[in-house]
Amino acid sequence: MKIDDSMREKLLKTGGGLVKFEIPRSREGKDRKSELILLLKEYNVENIIHVGCCGHYKNLNDYLKNGGWLHGMLCDNFKNVIGTDIDKKSVDYLLERGCKRIYDKDAAYESDALWKELYTGFVKDKETAIIVPEVLEHMEDPLAFLKMIKKSYAGAYIMIDVPNCFGSWVLSGAIKSNMEKINSDHKWCFSPYTLLKIVTLAEIEILSLHFCDYSILSKIVKGNIFANTLLVVGKL
Image (cartoon, rainbow, N blue to C red; front, side, top):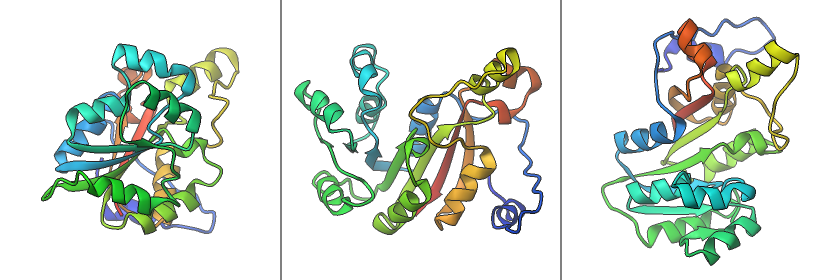
C-alpha cells in the first residue's frame, strides 16, 4: 500500500477530529519474515542492522533448531548483517552457540559502535537498512526511540513491523470469549493509522505499508485490515 498525499494529510491531522483512513481490499504481502526479506532485496539492501535480533529468550532454542530465526534468515540472504539486542542473557546464549556479530547494545543510543561494526563488512554500492521487527510494541516510549533512530541513522532505510490490533489473533478472543489475548510484554497496540502516525511524528519519510500474516477472516472478507502484522517501509 503506497501512501498518497491525501493519506499524508490525514496523518498530520490534529485537533481530535474524526479521521477515516481507507485501507485497500486487495491482498498484499506474505508472512512477515518473507515479506521483509523480499522488500530488503527490492530496495537493493545488503548492509543491515537488526534491532531486537534475539527474539524471546524462551524460544531461542526452537528458533535455532527449526530454521525460523529471523536473524539467521537475514544472514543467509544478505552479505553484511549485524544484530543488536538489549537482552544480554539472550545475546550471551547465542554467542555461546556460535552466532557472530551480535551485540548487547541499545540501537538508539549506542549507534556509533554499531556503525563501526557494520562498516567492517560494508558492501559498497548497496543500500543500508535498520530493521525493527516486533520491537515497538515492547517499548516504554516508541516515539522517542524512533526520533533517536532517525537522528542516528540518517540516510538509511527503515523497516518496522508490529502486530496489528485488528488481527485475528486479537479479534478471535474478543468475539468468541469477550477476552483480550495479548503478549504480557506488550505495552502498545498499533493500527495501520497509529503506526503510520507515530512514524510520521518521528519525521521519517514513509514509503509504503504492507499487510502480512493473513488470517482466515482477512481471506473471507477480503480485507487487508484484518492481517495479523503491519510492516512499514521508510527512509531516515
